Length: 237
Length: 353
Image (cartoon, rainbow over all chains, first blue to last red):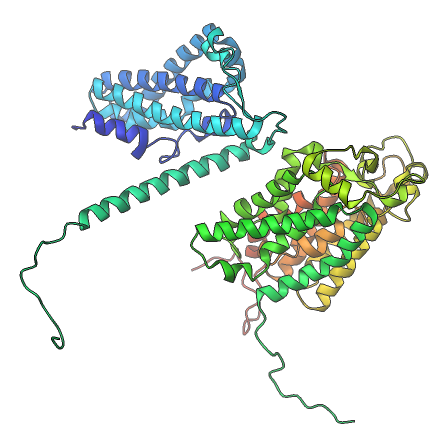
């Protein structure tokens, strides 16, 4: 398989985005995207696991037989998830407590197993690493976008509590967009996540349709200069 | 006296959605008048604001979707959604509550699913539930009926009401209080008889709480008018009200402190009549077959009673209707009517081979 890095990048971030196109990993996407800090925390953890598992799977791709590949992949993913969990416990303990069960649940994120099986087990190590990173980025970006929209709608703030993830330097990053905001609870609750994700998918499809239309218009624009023959039907006036 | 001879066809023209919707709006008028009489001008303001928002949202979304704006605005369905939501919202709630609720109803619940005729859920109730779970504080402050006003305290004037709605200025705490359903829900030590004597909202009323009983009777009147005009069949409302009646009779237990409330109380308080005749009968989101409508109405009745008596929310018509909207396709699947020319109705469970 020869896939260029730019194609892998385009696939991961846009064309085959795990959250918006494949609709994989919806459980964490919907459950922890209540604020930017939660979304970013889980997004980074997912990137870490995805890159690690993709590299590992790619390394052993010739030695593992097809029959047992899925359990092996899951074991690899589970090990990386445990590493990530321990890392978060050590460095971002409060965020670890907030995200709770959703960090171990990264194991069950279909996007990760999907990439291991569909890409890493068929490609060399560098390509797999880039694919893992780009897929992870695609997922994390959507997660952060959903998180930001839900935080603004639900709490009227942006980047609240970022110090849980980024340390004391992010202590004052919180932007209060509306003073005295009553709080639109639906945006924080799971239905809000579904609605926001649905709108993001719609926007992506809209952009795709627009791009396609423009390309089609570009293709059809070349006009033959000075046509050689004039064909007329009916009477010539 | 000459005997008028008329030949068929007797209908002068094809009925259209707009006529039906106009009848529904007309039938809301007694309820609206009663609400305004007992609780002041708040509901009227809500209805006007919600209708305007509904029309604006409907027009904007239709424009976005490249649909004929005038054609769909003329069917009045958006206005009905606005009116019903306006009637359900608490009087004197801030203006943005009305706008957010109506916009969610029209945009999320109606047009995201495909617009008029395609919405699986009742738009007005989706808007109501979104508001109820998002802004519980604003949504549970209901105005007190005029019978409970103190001596010398006049009802809230329209000018002060508008000021409060749009700027939040002026306290209207003296004009808000618990609804009969709230009071009943928080009763855990008094006999029903004592409750009726001690709580002013019951003491100044007749059967089910001051104001509310008349509001419900007014909606019943509107509903009977709609039945008379054959806007909908009797199945859903009657089965819903009958279920509530039977359940409340069964769990009344003679008015002890654990009583679920008398049948009068449940039939004439909260949104029972509005729900039975105006919400549950929505032709788009309800069950279709006549037998199915009986089950659909009964389901709403059971849910309303269960959530009111054993649930966390004082009233439950919106939740009950939405839950049964989920179930409507399922009910229709199992209640296929008999096709003309067949002895028996086809069963959905029978094998196809």
